[in-house]
Image 1 (cartoon, rainbow, N blue to C red):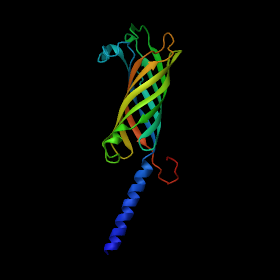
Image 2: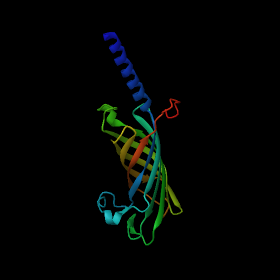
Image 3: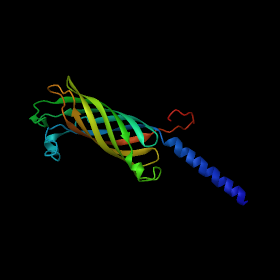
Length: 200
């Protein structure tokens, strides 16, 4: 009887570890909102929400592939509107301007260094990458650096919070130069329910 119980325990543990391994490198889909500060004031205007932040139609969507447990690569799309009467690069806008950004980021989940990956209530990471920002018909290439935390909600769902600093590398007149983008939303870890390996 003892041997049977031991075999059952080993089987359950093996299945659990296998499931954890399968979930270690999932595809992750995200949807949320963003808010942008392109005032040109950076630190001095960081908390001036009424004049420096833009948040009209602020949609963000992302897809990420996790790999080697601690790493990920994310493609992020952002839409917003720069609003009349608010500050952009030190100037007050006299009309609304459309905003879009396409970004690619490498992520390193540094919180895995000090906590159990499968029992943690959050995942902390830093990101680095590049992207293209389009304001009206002007565009600029940006270099991106940021931080984020994913907060555990369920096995498949997390609350995502993210801050990205973007530096214009070849800004054109009327386009974004350096700005800060904050994102908040939900992310969903896709499950390989039929064991086809589709999401690994």
